[in-house]
Each structure stands twice: as C-alpha cells, then as structure tokens.
Image (cartoon, rainbow, N blue to C red):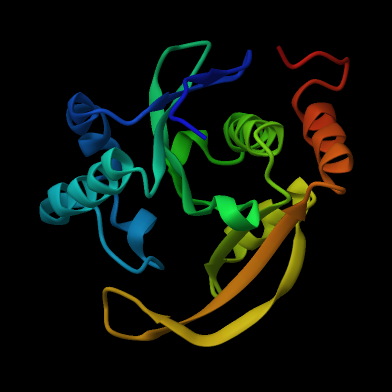
Length: 195
C-alpha cells in the first residue's frame, strides 16, 4: 500500500505532507478531541503530535490523511492506516478525529468507506479499529459501520494523563467487507451511488 489521494462525492483524503501542519493546527485545538487519547495534539502539544504522524508517514510505518469535505473544500480532520502488517495482510485504521461540526455527518462513514475499500482492494484480509473503553461515540460509530466488536484488553495502554486505558477492539474481515460496504453506501446515499 502506498500513500494515495482518495475521494468520493462526500470527502477527499490527502496523504499527509509537511504543509498540512498549518491546515490541521487550528482543527486540533480542541481539548475534547484528546480527552481519551494516548497522546495530546491540542495547543502546545500539536507540533509533537504532528511530527509523530509525519515521521511515521514518511518512514512508511503509517499512512496519514487529512480529511476534507468535498462540498466546501473545508479540512475537517485526520485518519490513518497504522500497524501495517503486510505479511499478515492486516492493518489498522486509527488516529481518526474530526472537528465538532463534522461529527455525526457523512464525513466519517464516507472516509471509512474509502479507507476500507482501498485496504481490501490491496489485499488486506483484516482491518482493525480500536478505541478507549470510555469512548462510547467511537464504539457506536464502529458498530453502526458494521465492524465486529472483538473484546476489551484491560489496562492496555497509558493515556497522556497517566491513567490506564481499557482498549476495545473491532475488526472487519475481507469476507465481511461486501456487507459493510453495502451498509456504508446505503447510509451515504440511500438512492444509490457514492461516487
């Protein structure tokens, strides 16, 4: 898998570049986005977060994307492929966050449709997603998307505050992808046609 721009009629995902720092900085400056994360990216913490994302991206260990709304051209967040394991035909979609006005809209299902579509088209057999055990909004979004909740790893990761996070794992398998794709497509455009 190589960094590639992805788009449908709802969103455009651009592979992360150094000049995206100025694009993402004001979007990330919302402490609520980082309340349940392992590291912070708001305010004074943004540059360290961005440098980590860009470093992982340029090294090939991660493929980060800036998410834009197609209708307005407005940048609304970030999502990435990480934990790339081509030998096991497995990867994770994560580091997904959106500004408040984009949450609960077509943005997340449209972005997930593109990311999952590319992952399975390039040979993935399993796509993983995970979130904080307290992040009910994220868990509900994964269930609504059609991902399977696999379980909880207790005290799995330390957060930036120093407390321990229970991590909830979800996945979509290649055999489940047609069903998930149909569900996402129907959510985005009940009349048909997401392109």
